[in-house]
Image (cartoon, rainbow, N blue to C red; front, side, top):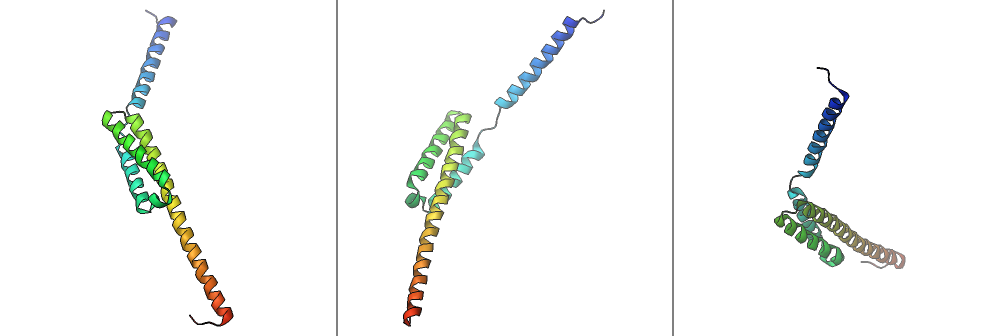
Length: 129
C-alpha cells in the first residue's frame, strides 16, 4: 500500500512535536543555582572585607538583601528566582567592592600628593625633615 501525503504530513507533525517537546524539556531542567549562590556569597564577603560598609553602604546592603532573598527562594525551590537574585547580589557586591577600592585608592593618592607638596615646600625653603 502506497504512503499518502496526508500520512507523511502526520508523521512530520508528530516528529516536529517530539522535537519541540524535547527542546522545551531541556530548557526547563536547568540545575539548581548553587554555583550562583556561592559566587554571590563570595562577592559579598569580598566587598565586606574591602570596607564596602564604609565606602558603598547602600550597595553592600542591597547585595546582602538580594543574597538573602536568593537563599530564601532556593529553600522554597524557586530556582529561577534564586538564580536571578543571586546574580543581582553578585553584581551589586562587585560594584560595592570596586567603589570601595576606588575610595581607598583616592585616599592614598591624596595622602601621596600631600606628602609631595610638603617635600616640595621643604625643598624650596631649605628646611630639613
